[in-house]
Image 1: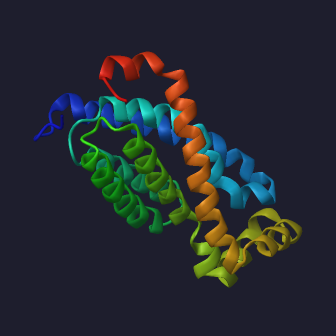
Image 2: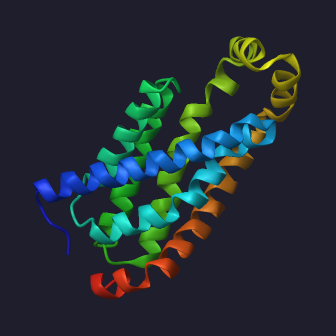
Length: 194
């Protein structure tokens, strides 16, 4: 059953789980020194963050918490230089994920998996400058990482790659969610989630 109002415990939970999620996102970011992983970054994040996100969902019974998490993560991304696109995708993906969980009354496993698939797409917002501002983005990358790295990365950034990345991120989120469920089986039994 969902709760109507946010309480202090909800806000503490969203803060803690947002911090854990962001730490894992930063860990995944270290793979960005390899050009292919700069593009596959959202896939790695979806795999790594499945466990904490699914645990968060077992404790989430109030509409709006997933949206708050998405916005918080977007703000953290902006604060650490990833650009403002991730705030928009954090808000949109968080809100859609919240609606999906609410539709499943916060107890449906299928809705939780779909929720995580949608939520995981927010990370792509931090990468949109690769496609939207390609010339200036890769000029900056060339200055920071060298021309060879920038050329190697730019060769991976095609129109079809963005669509493929969204699909592969959803697939990785499904795997991450099932990994989370396997690891957190006792929490699911306690929360009564089927």
